[in-house]
Length: 469
Image (cartoon, rainbow, N blue to C red):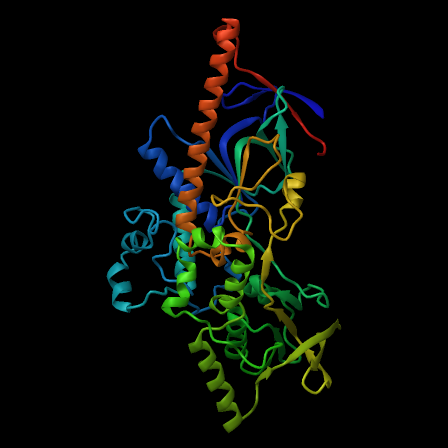
């Protein structure tokens, strides 16, 4: 253990450390999940004077954003607007989507629109509106490199040091990981100006060299892939668009009422308590509610476009079913894409202007930030309140807002449960704080009874950070 010669006094700073701010809670990442938590904390603090939670959120980006590279014209949300940042937790909140509409003088117009599904562009504007309004401490442009447990003289770690790339550090009794997902990139792909993941699609199009071959390849069979295909087919009227996927055709998303119940907040209780085998069985059965599926109306639109071309020509839209990309090779004029049809085993090579990887996402690696606090297992041990199981000598807490699908269900990385989950995490933080305070008071009473001098001794603990465990 390395002695860092810093002393925590229980106040807002660690003595001897100019960056030693101490917070009750520090959120890493400031996307919708931690934004919902920030709002819940603000509303709690307003109604609970004397029991406030001092929080700070650290975000790598320089401003709030929610998939800005996929705000395609006309694309709509796949979840209903009441599943916003607050409504399922607090229907009277001023941060609801309805409140946003009212403030922007669009409430009546939206109701007349008779839809539960706003455009993605409008929902992004709602999220940005909420991020601007919330009065929490958000530090943009802060790239976190590590979270380290600080051990006191008793050998217990009841504080974390959160270090950023610029050398600054803040301290927290609770860390909430809301780092989101990372793009899944196939092994054959090398990302470049001509080969890129769809999450920054619009930005890449702006940077892409001018089309020469008038041909694009889109890899994937989910909603994002279909939306990219439609966008390219519409906005590049001279270009061919080849959609390559391993399925025989698009599968429709199941948004029927009974299937959608798997996203209900109460279902998290059932799934978390269920045996692992049963939970995995149910999640596999209902993947069609979210993964590698496409909205039926978009399937119909693309099929109609392809059929019109078969009737009148020329052919520009090609569905390369039961196929896969074997390799790509960039040239000075474009990118060559080798595609194999797995039905007959034959391959051909297309000279293209770009390859768009609509290949999905996966949970971000926690080990790169949490180090030895993270678990190197397929199913990290996460309690029902989203709290990560930590070593016995760590009394501080880490909560996961994401990466918990295998323990908590399909809502782990979606907006559907963001509001309720934020309330559950905050309740857990408050409850555990009260419990720890009770234990500390009991210990102090015992010490006071034994020495009679505890009230004259400052409440100070010397902390050290562990190199490895």
